[in-house]
Amino acid sequence: MSRTDRETLREWLYREQEGDLAPAEAAELKAALAKDPDLAREREELSRLSRLLVSEPLPVRAGFRQQVVNALPPAGWEAQHPRSWWLAASLFLVLAGAGAALVGLGSGRLSGEGALFSAVAALTDLFRSAALAGAGLLAASWKGLGLTLGHVADGSRLTAAALGFGVLCLNLLFVMLWRGARRAPQRSR
Image (tube, rainbow, N blue to C red; front, side):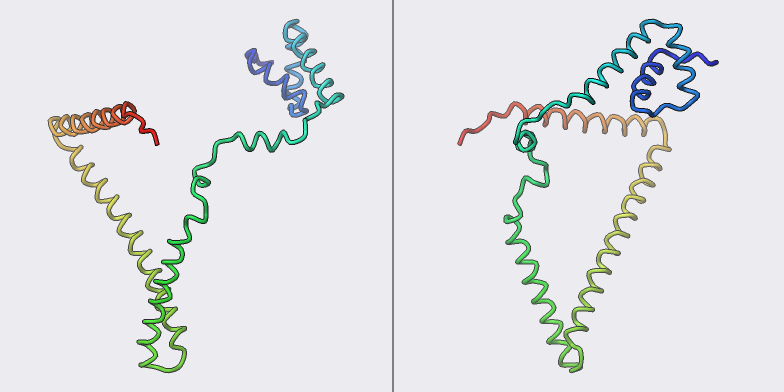
């Protein structure tokens, strides 16, 4: 039989109450309970508490759940109400509609059949191509930055020391800005 530390045995006590203990762990726990009276007393207390919780559930006052939810701070995405986005959404729709209309009118002169559908398809293809190009540019930028920093770091010790000094200076700058922002007086309205 392996010797298990006391914290693991105590964890097994809780898992035993939930019925989540493997047979080998249960056998080892039983052997440890026979040798350790403190552990056996803790098992009995847990068993008593478990029976008490099952037999006498605590009543919860009406509206308690709503009080807890109301007391929570708002999440970051809840901070701005959706009504504050109406201007941006309407401008996007106006610009998209104007672009589709202009492309549709221009392509309508070339071909009379399905001009609007072709214009929408062209705009969709434009947005998809722009997104792919942006993703590729972002990946290439990060790869280029990594290669540049790798080349700089592979240089001499003086270069590495200068790079470390620059990072230290940036950290000090950020700490000074952070402390200055904390000391700034709050303006009353």
